[in-house]
Length: 195
Image 1: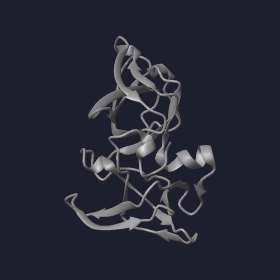
Image 2: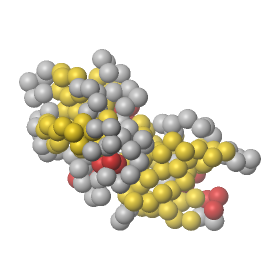
Image 3: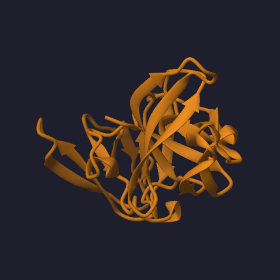
């Protein structure tokens, strides 16, 4: 499982100043980074190194430093060369655009195109699938927005709470994952509007 976080800020190189200004990946506004939940503590400041997956011409593993071992929600990346911050997908749209969903405690997102959602079996294979029309909105509830697994295939799907139909009716789903689609492209191409 990996938690999806949205980058909000100016496009630029993600750099590690603690490792000689090494350039890790180019990051775009609205891009998703996936926090693997793996944290290593170091004696120096800042003490916690977090493992992330990011797509930059291929999946890359990057390590980012923060002063907490928790999910790095609402954390600045200025110490990594960027003028921006990371925000949990479940909180991003509510926090910045007022697109809050009270029943789930999370955010909702518009869709750019008809988008698939799936349910996985116990082995991580697609068991059931359905589609949300482009005039629907997907709801990512508080504590959701995570992947089923950390592998390349599953990073294209994040846990959803439900959706809002075009007529405004709210539908809660259980154990469903929305397909981000085009995760390998610029964030303006994602099916979920994070850009």
